[in-house]
Amino acid sequence: MVAICVAQADHGINAAGGFPAVFFLCRESCLLLRHIFIIFLGATAFFWSLLINKKKILLCRTLKNYVEISGKVVFKQYWQADERGKLKVKHIVQFSGGAASAYVAWLVVQEFCKENTILLFHDTKAEHPDAERFRKQVSEFIGVPITEVSDGRDLWEVIKDNHCLPSSFIPFCTRVLKQEPAEAFYKEFDEQGIEYMLYNGLGPEEWPRVQRSIVRGEVAGRTVRCLLAERQISNVEVKKIIRDEWKICLPEPYMHLKHNNCIPCFKAGKGHFYKVWQNYPLEFAKAVQMEELIGHTVFKYKSLAELAKHWEQQDINQPLDFGDEGLPCVCSA
Ligand code: SF4
Image (tube, rainbow, N blue to C red; front, side):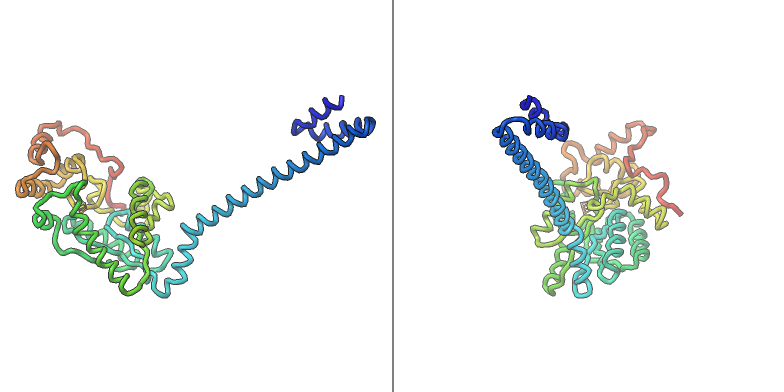
């Protein structure tokens, strides 16, 4: 009888009813059974308290990690920047002129004020003219002037000087026209002992690139932040805010292309060149000339001239694939 009651007591929720019954029976039984019951009760209480403590420990650890993670990624950096901002920390936005970096620039100004924000721009002289209009309007809207640090040559001159066509495998155009001027700018800050953080426009859709940019920054001893990825703000949201709230027209290339980059961008694929061929024939013709001059082709088996011939034979009524940049109108005004 005692054994049955003990077994009942061992089943969690039945324990409340089982223990008094066992205790009642034990009063009537021998001293040995009573001692066994007391030991059992003590052991149960001991293990139960251990379990609760373990849960508490786990909870504490979780909270501690949360604070540490938040402290490292968000609060600590903000706090440091706010405190030192009056002294020397600068917040450098890699301001390409695309919608994403424009919105990041605005976010940075909200956090660290205009005086501590730098909009760093490198001119490749191969972008659509409307990109310039967009950059200026954004700069005026957020109240920070553009800091231009450029190589001075345009994309086509860099190609000629290197006797080579850039590609995703050898993107020397990015190195010459953007990375090297940027490095020269950062070097001046390093030499003067000015602390800075870098911000780019990479968003949640580009997680591998976000990781790479942060790691590269770490390797170079710099803090790189991708605010759109950190805050999970999508490219679609950013464009909507700029058009509908800021009332600034997005740059014209967004009507046809995914990025407001050089036209054409040699790191991009055939789909991009197809859209350039359709929408920017003069720029496409420049790329064809460059293939002839250098003696190599952008794509492996066909020259751009051959691709153009092939595309000409396609059905012109074939719907264009605008993807996520297929905006009905670039201007909200
Ligand atoms: S946008 Fe494209 S073509 Fe222009 S510099 Fe960058 S990789 Fe080169």
